[in-house]
Image (cartoon, rainbow, N blue to C red; front, side, top):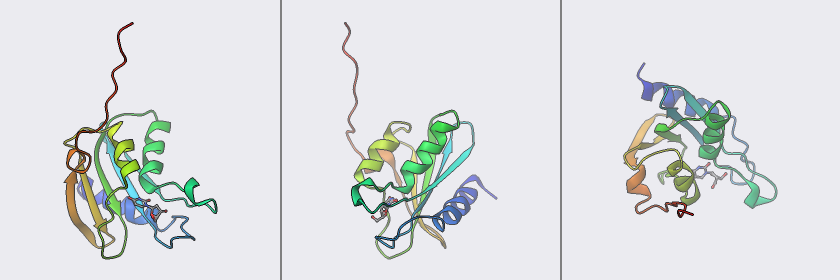
Length: 133
Ligand code: THU
């Protein structure tokens, strides 16, 4: 099984554990870090709607909690006709740990539907360089 097949399987599996009683829209995400490990996350909604977390945020948090690293590849799994591309906030969160060439795949449980790069999804992303004292 290729890395990407394993990532798709992990994201598809974790998606079923999403807590999405308000939208009814379950999302799973899996990322591969630069040491080859896979980290998965699902969306976790809240009765106070803005407190909900996207699947990508959960996967990023799992990577950081496990020691951190750089993100080399991402897959997001959802159902429905519109492509479940990452929201604006998640694009920025991914950019903290990934480069513009990092592949972002959007999939259904049946397979990959479209592939992007982070730079394509978030061009001219915000950078901050601390001014010299
Ligand atoms: N959602 C994600 O988890 N990831 C995405 O890439 C897009 C949207 C979640 C947030 C919310 O729980 C539900 O999908 C509906 O917007």
